[in-house]
Image 1: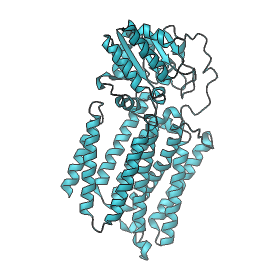
Image 2 (image 1 turned 120 degrees about the vertical axis):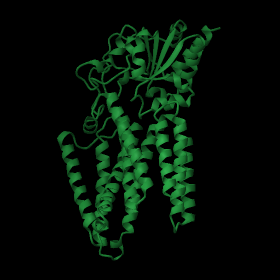
Image 3 (image 1 turned 30 degrees about the horizontal axis):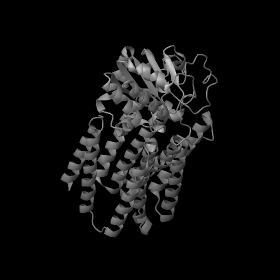
Length: 465
């Protein structure tokens, strides 16, 4: 069995490695699925006294719900689904630890506390419950925030941090009580209090974090779910859970660091003070020289363009316009233009959101260019089309102060002509004015993204006749 565990672990490593590239991510998913199947089969083969009816029922119900969710969830709600799955992963790990407590000798009239079962078990049990339940409620707060719900912390500033510190002290006390409890009543009470405090902490930790920081939060919660899974492996003595959970946890931490770097912010800054949580700045809509245009006029610009860069944002997902932007790109390529898609690491509502969106519409992987790779090419680009993006193209990031000061952005303003498709002049999550909109080389198309792109496709076709 150990050799099968090792094989599954190696497959998980290879799968995660393949997920780091757009070209190989589908293969990485398939390899990871095979690894998971092998791990599950190995665990079943090594475990006795299994209720096969309960197992099959669980597989049918869980698998059925999973298929239904995957089919019914539109691309615009993919971030919410990822957040929910992170939360459910954390809950599953916490339930493993809670189930282990129900089997503990002290629950069956044996005077033996968790500390007597070994240091590893005494530490891993409360940690699994804590991280798992924090991940559960934190992920669902992120779920609601991603869905547009306005949730804010009841306390502000220092008072908020004092509350969190008080909850942390309570968690430490309940964890110690859980470890040393020598009666069923004591262990049960400590476990319930620990669970409640962990659930509350998860809610309060994510509530104050603004929408612009959601990509960081989602990747961090993904890491939490992995750490909870690894800790639960120590609780039940399963090396497969320990290793795979550690892989997920470390991968999530690395991704979180990448997201923070893309925003030029520290993780502490994200967790302690969320961007976009405060009200919109007074000058956010105070624009003086806006030049609007139409899809027909943009098509005429594109007719003579040798190089075009598309910049997708969350507005593209909301409008479900990914297939239309791909159609426009294909038309321009047929006319001899060099078409690429510039992907900012934190565009959208989760890491890789724009990559997933464009891959769904069959945009070739070699046309997807990351920020660091494409930024130097904007100065040689004829037309940039920005679809529903705001903060990731805001030149205010180059200023010394401000909510997004120092954040790496796509240098779209260096192009000859910039076309921004946006329904209004409403600010992004950072809540600040975007001086790009007033630049001499910027044209605004005030339409729904799909409507605007469909108009451009129609006119480009007409010009090609």
